[in-house]
Structures are given as C-alpha cells and as structure tokens.
Length: 320
Image (cartoon, rainbow, N blue to C red; front, side, top):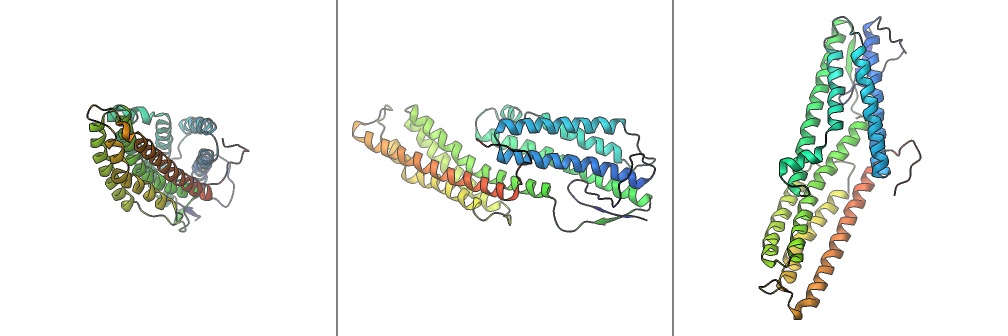
C-alpha cells in the first residue's frame, strides 16, 4: 500500500519514484495525470509572471503558448487508454483541459459589451467580471470532481490518499491575490466611469447632464465604499485597499467641492461665463491633478503587491 498526497487546487500528487508511462499499475496511472497537470500549473504561473513584469504583447504571446500546450495535453488525453475502471479520471481530466481551452479562447470583453449594451462602460466591466467568475467557478467544480475521481480510484486500488498540509500552492496564492485586486478594481472603476460621464457632459456644454452626473458619482462612491468594506482582506496587503479607499474618497469629495464649481461656470445656454473662466480652469486642473495622483498611487500599490508575491519570469524580459 502506497501513500500519496493531494492538494485542493490542481492535482499535486508527488510520487517518490519515477515511473514509466506504461500504466502497469494504478499508481503509475495517477502519477501520469499528476505530471501533466503539474506542467500546466507551471505554465500558468509563468504566464502570471509575464502579465506582471512585461509588456502586454509579450504576455499575450505567453498566453498563446499556454493555450498551445493545453491543446497538446488535450490531444494526449484523447489518445490515452484509460486504466481499467479508472472512476472517470480520464474523462474529467479531458473535461478540465477542454474547459480551460474554451475559457482561453473566449472574448469576454465582446461578450460583456453585448450583454451590457455598451462598450466602454462600468456595466460592461461588471458583466465581464460575472462571466469570468462563472466560468472560473465551473472549472473549479470540474477540478473538485477530478479530485474525487482520484480518491475513489485510489481507494479501489488500495492507495491511501492523505490531505496535504495547509501551505497553499503558488498558483493558488497568485489566483487569490489577483482576485482580491479585481474586487478593488470594481470599486475604483465605478467612480472613474462616473467621473468620465461628468467630464463628457461638461465638454458637451451640458451642465444639466453634468448635474445628474454628480448625483451618479455620489451614488457610485457609496457603492464603491460598500464594495470595499465587503472585500475579504488578505494578509499580503497592507496598502492597496487603503489607496483604493482614498481614490474613491477623492471623487466623493470632488462631488461636493469641485464639480459644483465647474458646473456653476456655465450659463443656462451652456456657455462658460466670462467671469468664471479662471474658476473653471483652476477647478478642472485640481480635478485632473488629484485624480491622476490618487490613481497613480493606487496603481503603484497594486503593482507592488503583485511583484512582492508573483515571481519574475524565468526568461529575461523588459517592461515598457
């Protein structure tokens, strides 16, 4: 009877001995899938590294490489002869890589825009988040089924499965940090999109529409603050959520102290009053400087958080 360990994110089964892939024993069969998924896990970590440390086009090339590797894994699984009574291991392993390929090839941005009815808007951001979250959860469920398949197969073949220790995998940690950042982004983007709507209304010389926009940004700031309070804190972060709160707070203050001055500079016909040109220009400069400053601090905090916990790519790369 052999003892193996199973983790909860991907299959992290580590054999003490290297086996040939002849599947002459159930242990060899389990080890084969372990090596395949471990390789894919390493590729995902590498892709996460490129996202943080390189240009977007370089990271996209790495994403395509990951998809190609996943496709090859799928083809190997399809050709593989399942071990007798494998309890669905092969079928669910194939389902996992098929789902990963489906997710990798989806254009979530276009799907979200179609669902929301707008392209560059907060509604499309929310829609994209919902779509990706739904697929991620579905993939997680499939992986959980795979783990149960492994456990069932192991039990039937007198292989004892032990729960791993409490240390999470690197990929699990990366996923948790990125999910945390995504929740913070949802809060900050809501107020930033509301701000853009006000600026657009003012550029169109439509103070009435801008006044409605001020009401919207106050509501957006309240929503953002509620969202930030609901975000589950992570031990790795000490500053990013605080910068997100300050960025949201800036826009909420602007609704009281900056936007009203800018709107008051317009007459009923939508023209800027001569005596208030300087007030308008100074106020818009304050708004621009404040927004850029707080957003830069937030973006820097996010980047620092990721770079502290996500390893650099193994290849030498230059970030623009």
